Image 1 (tube, rainbow, N blue to C red):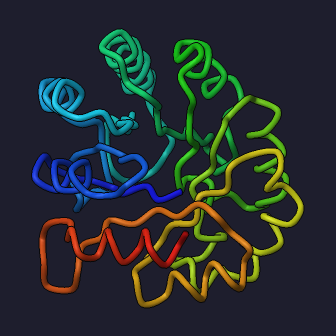
Image 2: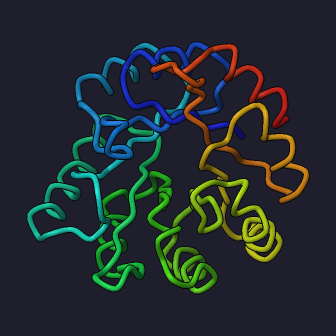
Amino acid sequence: MLEIACFEITSAETALKSVADRIEFCADIALGGTTPDFYEFLHLKRTFNTPVYVMIRPKGGSFYYSDAEFTAMKSSIITFREAGAHGFVFGVLNAHSEIDEQKNSELLTLAGDVPCTFHRAFDRTPDLEKSIKTLIRLGFKTVLTSGGKPTAIEGKENLKKLIKKYGDQIEILIGGGVRSENISELKEFTGGTSFHSSAILKYDSFASDDEIKKLKMLSS
């Protein structure tokens, strides 16, 4: 399974025309991804059949949100769900960088039967095993992770352990610097089958169709 992170409409269209299994649609690459424009999402949904997962994140920086920011997240989920989002990507931590069970549970309830991914806020938590057990209990379908390290290559030992112990209970989506030159190593070492990449090549600003095709071929 190959998911392409798309931070603007051009990359999203490239990925949806290419061989990606789904995209994560968001805005603001400099902030690590925030909630995208609703009308751009509608355009993608009406034009393409490939699933579009929507990032729900009102700001960059920490994953600890004010009451107003959390209200905005709830509103976004309702709006995008009613417009036919295929999935959601979000993650709320508390002031101690642990998973906020109450707030994430509220968002999961609003999402209904739309599958939800807990994003790389997971990698900020102090105990990955405790965190993944919490996500499974809450009902997340997927967790996006680099194994608690800045990149998936650096976190490959942790990824291998998580996949071995929990891969049959939650989709472990390997992300963090995943490119065609390292995806084979990650697949072989970790036993992972799901990968997440922006497919943006060095010195480029947009996803590359050639890179998406290489990633898909090497991950299959």
